[in-house]
Length: 373
Image (cartoon, rainbow, N blue to C red; front, side, top):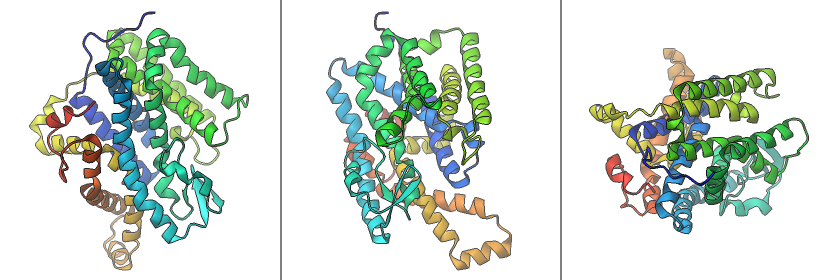
């Protein structure tokens, strides 16, 4: 099949912006609550990768053969906020006492000094200290996103020629891993596992950009979407995670199928969401979260840890015990408050990385679109 370029790309829309804002919001809420139903209600990570894949395909098509410019911009917009995050949290982790090292939720004794270079170029999730393991736990997304950006030029070329084979290849790898025919247990294996879990959604973003999803019959999209999502749920409840149970987000095969099915349905219904213009506070909130997406993601767990410390402060503890205020909503509100302060203080780093004028408060999305490449 010859490569196809979309005659009329769906482009960036307020609907896509809203999906990304909702996905980031759900990530923060999930990290506070930990409820296994939240990834079922809204599979945020699959949606974020699909949206990023669509935008990456659009950028590559605009630049034609000048892929290095696209990669340079994308890497700068990802790595500069990440480096700012590392400059703050790595010294803090050493100051708090780095006697144990955390990697993907596992804690081992000692400092993994040999892996500290990953804080410069995170081709795998960088290590963190045991006491601050929650701060670095979400960094797997940064590493996975980085690899997808680097692989996108050849991946897009191959997807446009062999779409079904490319969508099926990650499934094959995960099946081989699930039946113990393939061992993926070190840092390299972890990255292969993460890439295969979300590669189909990233390439689904390619199809969204090319307009392929919109050209397929609606009944076919609904059938495939519901079937794959149902299989993902069935797999999660049939083969639950030993630690978290039937949590879709902790089971790679369930994540792949459920996330793909739901994301396919969401990308097929291309609403304009122009009604947001009539609700300025909500419209601005969507804009602000999109303009500060990397900052929100990077600092969300740090904000949640800070909120937990604040709500454990004795005067506040006595207050909510005496007033009967539930603790969980209090932590959630406090976490969002702390995160908003952090984003106001450090969000300008994303402007710096994108070559925009530095702003404490993001401007309208119309101006932002001129820089979204």
